[in-house]
Length: 295
Image (cartoon, rainbow, N blue to C red; front, top):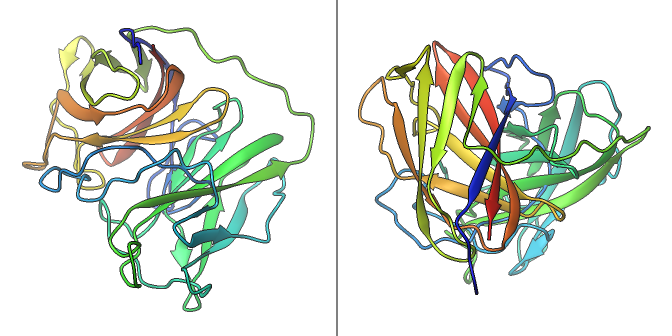
C-alpha cells in the first residue's frame, strides 16, 4: 500500500470527568462514559505503558469473537447530561462482570459525533449484574458512535486477556448541523499550551509519533501522571469514525513529565484522522484536538 507523510492539523477542545473538569463543553474524559466501539491494530509490547493489551480491528462493530456490546438506548436527549446504559456479553450470551485493568481502568468509554466533534472519554461504572452506566455531558443533535474498550478477565477460548473495542450508534434528535473538519497544521494551542506533533505515520505501518508541549514559549515539564502515562491519545477516522488508540511509549518516571512524549502510531487506513490528546497539569485535564492526514 502506498503511503505518504502525514500532515498534522490541530484544534482545541477540553475534556472533563466526574473527578476532572473541562473548560470546553462536549469534550469530556474521566469517570463518565460514552458508548461506541473500535479498535486499533498494534503489536503487543507489554513492557510499555498502556501496551500490555492492544486491540485489533477498527471498532466499528458491536460484536467480535462471540463478545457483544448490547444496549436498549437507541436515542439520547440533546442539550443535557444523559446516561448511556449497556452490557457486554460473552460467547455464552451472559453479561461479563470481570474485566482486566488497562491504564488504571476496567473500561475506557468514548463518544464521538459523526463529524468527529463532541469527543468524550469517560469511565463508566458497573452494577453487580454487569450493566454499565456511562454518564455523558451535553450532546448535540446528530448521529453519535459509542465505543467501549475492554479486556475480559475470565472466560474460555481466545477472548480472555484480549483487548476488544466494540461500538454502537446513538441518535440525538434535533437539527444536526455538520461541522467541517479543520485543515491540517502542525501545532495548536489549548488552555494557553502549545501542542506540536512530529512524525510521518503511514497507513498500515507502525511508526513513532512525538508530541511536544510548551507554554509561554518554554517547554512544559510539569505534566502529571494520567492513566498511567503523561498523556492519552486516541484517533477517529473521517467518514466512518473508525477508532484507534495511539499507545504511549514514554513511561511514567515521577510526578512530573514532559515536554516530549512518544507514541506508537499504527493507523490502518489512509485519509484524515482526528486525534484527541489529553494531558494534565495542576490537577486540570486539557484536551487538544488534532487532524492528522495519512496517505
